[in-house]
Image 1: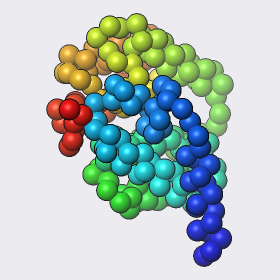
Image 2: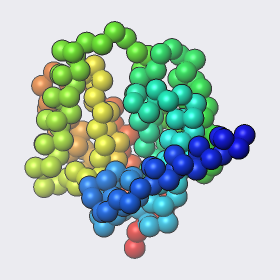
Image 3: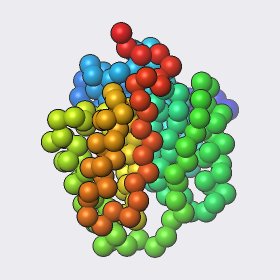
Length: 197
């Protein structure tokens, strides 16, 4: 029991590291603190929830560190990545729901298949094209979005200032060649619990 507590503490320390302000923000939430529409308190709460969940996932199985990604926005947890079987997917969903302060969980985990270099390269290209399109679109704050692509399906998570920005992000994603589906989990600033003043 002591070993688990010490390991959890050390992992938390490693994850929190001394990171300056960058595109992932000081709190590692994927959005720059200066332009994030959430209040500072909400950003800190989300960061704590994210680090807590990441540590518990890592303690559950070290392989998840490479294959499972999580994002927390306004108390909502988004999980993406690949797992071996449906039972693992359910375990991770349950683990996310057990996180203190969680409001909802969206599980977009996929069951692993044999590695396909061509498919992985195509997914990476789609993600890069969309990221570039978002950066060059003046209506969109690109740093507010996280993008994952799996088998030509784009998963977009983030916060939009307006419905026009949300629609612009989805339109940009639909314009990328070879995209089969766009799954957007984009929250509007007006729908956040507490907003920055």
